[in-house]
Image 1 (cartoon, rainbow, N blue to C red):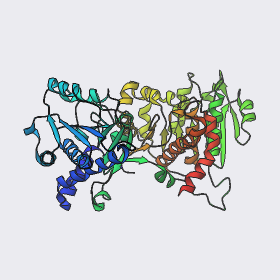
Image 2: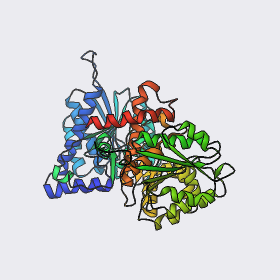
Image 3: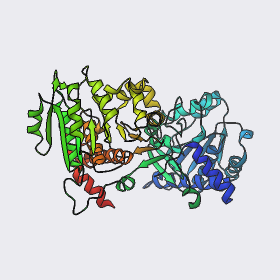
Image 4: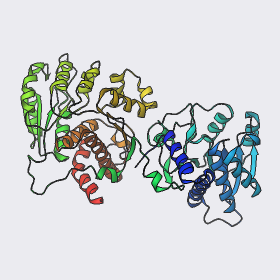
Length: 523
């Protein structure tokens, strides 16, 4: 599903108005009516006396988002709702299409109060009774700086209320192009987005303030919508299904790829086991695990279907002396997964960097492999001839970039995209709404998964998934996108049984084949 920035949505509106000839006031009417219909459908009172009417309080800014609010008020009023509109501006500050709809609302008998200072707003809010819903039509997608004064006061008041809050197009205070919160933002129950979802609604932290997200048609012609290009996609089941590798009926274990894994150390053998098992469960024909010789017998007993190879080790970790052996092992393989459980010894950085530089295989690097790359990320950009996938969580991303975790979480979309472009890698920034960014600047926002994935070993499972799809011949961006989606979808399938706490990484591993089959059958 296409996801747009504020500038891209503005361009869509302009083309619709200028090239097609649909006036902006018509688009505003369609938008406001669509929001009103969502409100009526969800929040109309049922089983109550006819004398009791649902009530809506609408906060309207002075721009087009406020204009949408006036249309909403008029349609709710026509359906018998009690409606009060607070305009956060003087009457003569309302211009153009918004002014037309404000006049229409007033002519229909709508109750409108104009408040242009904090004291007047405080007085109005103190006298206000209870409302069925509250409507945020303050800023919309054009906001570029934090709310202040009167607007900040309104946002903070909305966030203190118990009634459902409906955001018109986007929660006021959220940057529509990044998901960054500009100071303070409305915490919405429902967001009704116009024509397309916006980046800020599907990428955290903004996604966490959007509540349920609904996208409605406002009359953008298909010839405009279809031609609209974007570098951001929201990955749902339909998008993920298209990425599933084809399983030929006459295939054999050599047909579906051989994944080589370099992982594990004393005390961290479980990480290597989970990568290997998830690689097989995701469909790779063969998996070979290269691990320290000191733990190889133990892992071989646990991994019945996986080939294991002992490597020279140093203090329980793979030694740099094993580099040539790994190069030999890589011959005839289709992909390489590096990192889970490797350890943080002195030789590890040199080993990982040399493998990253010299291997001809597409590879996925995670966990301790990422730590080994810290301070050496400049070398990534010199090897654009074969794909590299990095899968950091926010803490690992902080070490790779030198940014703080808070800085990364506040601007995940931009951080992920910029790193991928700068270093010519596919970057999977894990977390709620995991982002997958490509070297050409495209970003995929994952829609599957839940908080149950926040437990140890889940990243190792994801590494195996992505490595497996690389071995099966998928391009790096496709392998990462599909791996992330299936990982989350498996958790979603287990939600009813396990809930969102106590889910283990091994539970996900066992669910992978059924999840892949379910995704395929849905088509």
